[in-house]
Length: 349
Image (cartoon, rainbow, N blue to C red):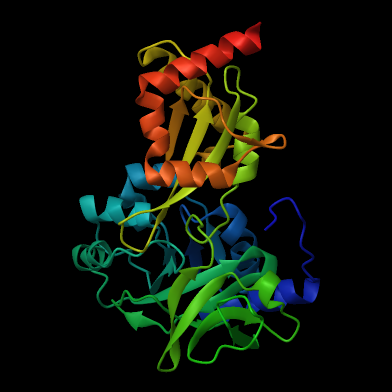
């Protein structure tokens, strides 16, 4: 963050981190093959492809749609290290396959939500109990993996270690800028790291390793969700007067956050067709102009006028109103619906 601000990546950091990843994280050498189907391209692929090239290995490109529809594709490739996403985990649980013949390791991104039951079921159904697994946390702005775990056959744990050769420090999670007093705190690369700029996730020491403790602010699988960009684009959809994104904690495994888009449409006719049409138009605009990554978990079109803060919707007001249930109640209450209609008549006049 902020998403639109470029980050300098020195060439020395890019190739050194990629070389470390090839040797330590992915365990690649000449003749090996790495596949990361479904791993976020902007987060993982630049560094992973460079690591593969430096190792003299092969990067196997498989589209998520193809693999999810036919998991047996994994058996047809000479994959030695395979990245598994939660979506691929579910696909392999539903349609188990024989272990790829050359597979020596599989990896998962530690910032993805961790459903212990699902991942252990994956290991049992796909004969992965004897294959070492590794957790990774890749930061493209750092040039590669900043965390990786010890390889453990068949193990699924939220454990990690700072990447090889990377000095680090733990700082107090309150934002004071002081070093952490105990074994838990904000991870910051050193010696030039700034706790307020570079620290965005929490680790808790467990023996010689760390437990992943999540991010300081709501994120989607560890990545910043582009709420401001999304709200700005949705506000341009005809019929929408303003929009904001509200993060909501869920009860899903891994402490996953859901991102709800609130789109204010002013006075609307009674019934659901008008709302459904606006909701479809919003999703189409997001897919066409921004891409699938920008799609929120839920789109809620409200027959109300937003509270503005300058030229933008008051996000703090939206958070309070939505979390308390007041916003949903107002959208259904006849008094507020009539007030919105009256306001629309006044503004129209």
